[in-house]
Image: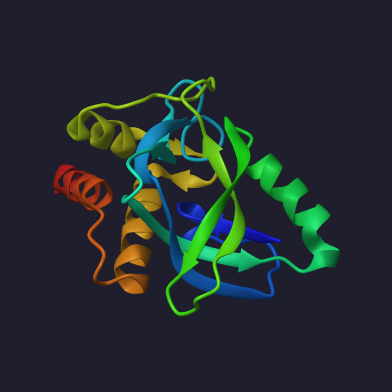
Length: 176
């Protein structure tokens, strides 16, 4: 089994895996449209984390595929189901590795617009203000945004993720 990391699973992997592969999925865009009331915010002051929103077939979301050892699948899924309990559901999609020709069927955690924590589209300035003031049990929401942006630049230097990088810049400007 393979799991796709496109948010904190890129830089905060807390489960065992056999192999990791860089690549992308198609038909989605990464957006900070999901509220976090249990990790990067609280019910009184929710943070913002990423989910994937449907887009055209040419859109790509870059991330990491993690191969889970057969004997660990049940434990890893139980752990991730708990970690992603704030509105995320499992979905299977096709993953396109950067350095292999073989496509992979992969599991992603996706927060649909029907879940209780879906905030939806908002002005990037409003999202940045929410990020700057939100802290939860897993830490400051600022760290989530900046760690993801730094990881994406390091792993995929030629990929421009306008929504992520624009939000990061707005957040950093607010801190000055």
